[in-house]
Length: 374
Image (cartoon, rainbow, N blue to C red; front, side, top):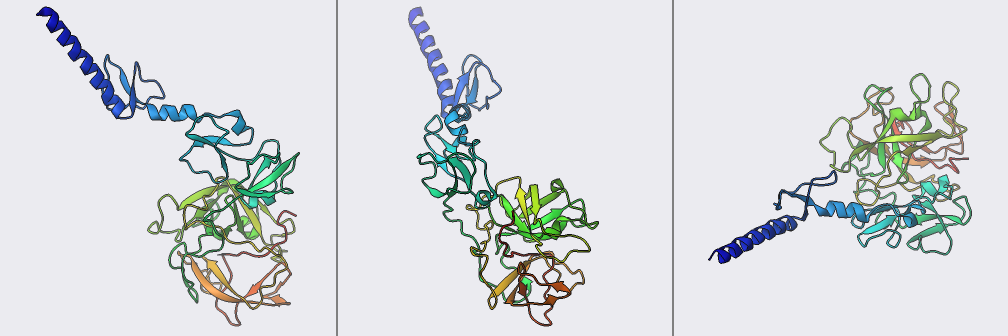
């Protein structure tokens, strides 16, 4: 009788321990002797004072550790479900649940031409690292180095999100022009907002050179600049989109080398490029897309209708700046003389009507430029 009772007790004890272990496993965990730093504690029970730790988190870290085949290509091992804005390779990382998000090869020197098109430099040695992209052989420096431009998929430049409004009206719907961004100078501008700009690639924004100078005609340090993305009204959060509307810090910027700022400025070559600290996702959200750059610098646009968008003065120089972005259609003109005391150069475009109340101030302007880095 005692022997039978002992067997029953042992059986119940074993069943209880197994039940507790199964409860932890059913919650995606594993019983551990102690809770280490990488242990995410779950509610499941374990026997002998063990701790139920989430095992998926640990396995993911173990499987996606950096591996040389990936890192030597300038890449990073990431989980399969994680998005990569460039090109991925499944054979360069250990583990079936990881992939290599490729980046600039350390042996290659990238060029502005590659960066501006959202590309990266890689060793073009007969491998298929850029099989899903376009290869530009003359855009990266180094032996066997080339630029890989990933296919953009659903990312198209210059596509508005709704029909066009004629006249100087508030843009509707918000973020209709998904490349429009606002330049913020919290240290030098009273309301923080200073100028508009246009997204031209995942890392670059195009703006006017004069926007990067303060009231004393001094260049604003890059660390004092920010760019507002998908923000229709900077004085309201009602139209902000969670996970999309954001403020991005500026890494650096470059103005055209022939631009002259100050009293001697003639507004010629008034253009600049801003390099963002973060890479923008230009495929996942319709509210964040790039504008199209002219493919031919010799193209003439006279006779066509342009769209001026931004937060410009609506009262003809009286400083009436709207909270929400506005737009207006303007005919592009061929003007070969001075306009408002400013000499018109081949690097400029003229748009507007006689006695028009619309002024191109504090707006997002996209002008043709042969080579902003020359």
